[in-house]
Image (tube, rainbow, N blue to C red; front, side, top):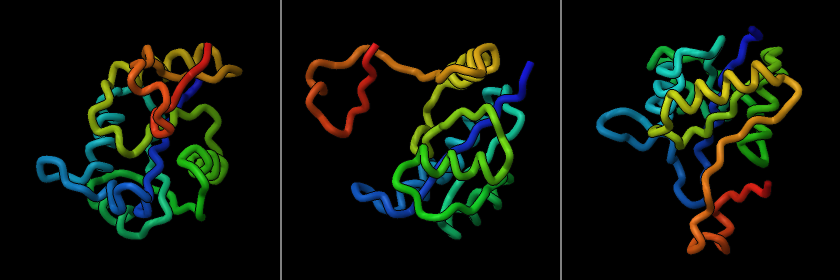
Length: 143
C-alpha cells in the first residue's frame, strides 16, 4: 500500500483568534494536541506541521514533531500543498491545526481511502445543520 502522510498547517495570524495554534488546552498547545491525534491514528508515513511561524515551529519541535517552514499562504490548503512539494510527498491528508479532538479512526479511514484511490480527493463531511447553512465560516460540501 502507498504511504500516506499527514500535514498540519498552522499560522499565528488568524483573523478571528490570533495565536490560536499556541492556545493551551489542558496544559498543551492546540497544535501539539492536533499532532498527537494524528499520531494516534497510527497510519501515516510522516506527520509534519507546516507553518510560517518560528513560535509554532519551536513548540512543535519541542514536542517531538517535525515541521517545515513555508511562505505566506492564502489558505491552510495552500500551505499544505507548498509543504508537500518541498518534502516530495505525494499522498497527503490535510489535518487543520485547530482539530485537537479529531477522531484518530476518522484519520485512519481517510488515509486508507486515499491509499486505495490515489487519483481521487477524499474528504470528511457530515449533514449540514440548517441553522448554519448561511454562515460563511461553515464549510459546505455539495454532492
